[in-house]
Length: 88
Image 1 (cartoon, rainbow, N blue to C red):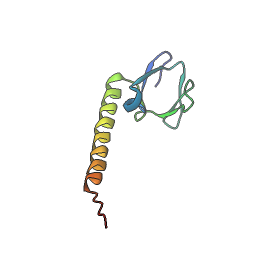
Image 2: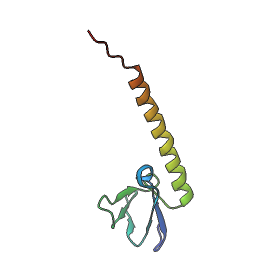
Image 3: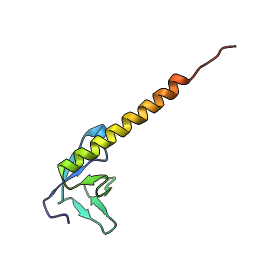
């Protein structure tokens, strides 16, 4: 599925460092559905969730991550806004 020299798009850290491009020279597809990227110390990534074969898929995943993060932050903000501290 992954061809030699093919670009892969790492999305796991898209919200903090953007979409990272790695080449298949440093990546190897495993039978478990994961991709091993040798140049990264945390080098195992799930194909289709953390790393994609096309830029369009990477952008779509990153956008979904952004929307989910915004929803999470709004939920946390509502929790903090509802806190009331009463002095005695």
